[in-house]
Length: 222
Length: 287
Image (cartoon, rainbow over all chains, first blue to last red; front, side, top):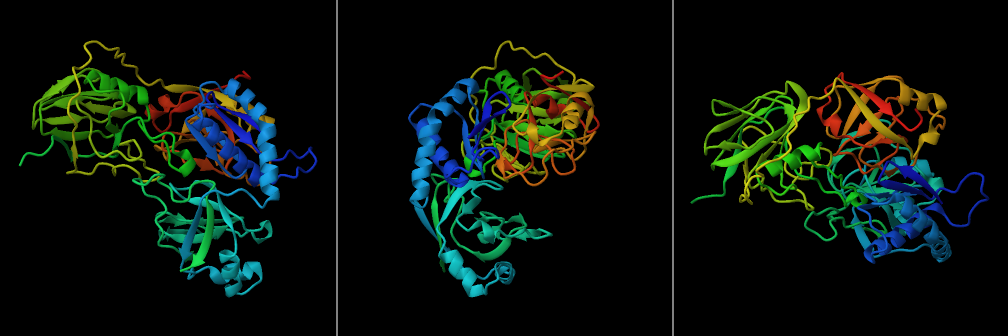
């Protein structure tokens, strides 16, 4: 864990294992998730004052800190506990929040391409996707767009060389090590495997994102 | 039937949006902060008409606009150097103006600077989205940008206009000097890149918008090849995409990004008035 400065009112908590340190036994994603949960809890209980807590692939941004120096000290103090929590969760197969089942029509135009990349047939792709326990690692790209982790690293996929000008809302897609779901229509370069009718972002809902960071997600053939 | 008082866009102009102080606090769900590009200018306009500082006004870009209000009210315009007309009468920026019902209010094209903020007593009363009435040009949250003929509801005036306020009209300087703090990813760049950033001039590019000010100048070479996993972005982050030309993120910036951020600009508000071609110099602790 390393704390990087970000301007005058923010800090970036970097969970990437430094290259010169022997391999840590806690996977990066579990460390990020443990920090996210801990920081949200600390804020809730009044130990941490910050406007935004933004988890991402291997970092967490704290933005809108009244006193970043003081928070740096707090983070160092909290680190051993968080690492221990992450290690325990990782050994137990990961820590997960609320479970959401996403019904998916698996009729995406890129299913054959995904099958090719994975060296399997299309039914095996569907078995893999419906059999994976996903977690929302973070949101980004668009309001409510979840980056879902859970697929093994060796199944990482390239993006389309030329992004589609319009990907329909509800499209279930894969890129890199992630699965994602487009909450609204937008241009996009991810490989499309299906679509869901689930509403992912509703400004009147609480929380507005159906799949917020930490959520446990399973896909089910609709 | 009498409806609520409204403001009508006779000529919406190049880009006129509803803006308040934005919706910070939702970045973890991928929701940009948005809000007026120069919050202090919007706050001032609001104080001048007796609004709470966070009331929504209009952010008007470059070409100006023409508006009509259905009730007699007080307005104030701050920001760029523009000529304001209430009917045929010229009015000053930076002070409260009384506008009779039905009279056309014209905000002229910016003579210097880019953006003006118009506050109307009572504020623009479109429904708030996640606590803000701001148009977010990146995600599409909030009301769409104004088109000719649009009518927006006005809220009830809150109180007396501020009797005295500081309205120092400051012309945008020909050259912007921005203070930058290095990090979080300055280690992804060569010493040459850091030196160039802090010693050579950059120029604001014409493709700049509410998302970011794109700059052109000496490219910033990377020390680390490959992709940076997506990470959280702050207002003022100086991101360096593959072409090495820096981009300073403004209010409608995405919440995460995959290009390394070499540093963070302390105060981005001067960029709200920076026209394409404006020279930008960065100042850091190293020099």
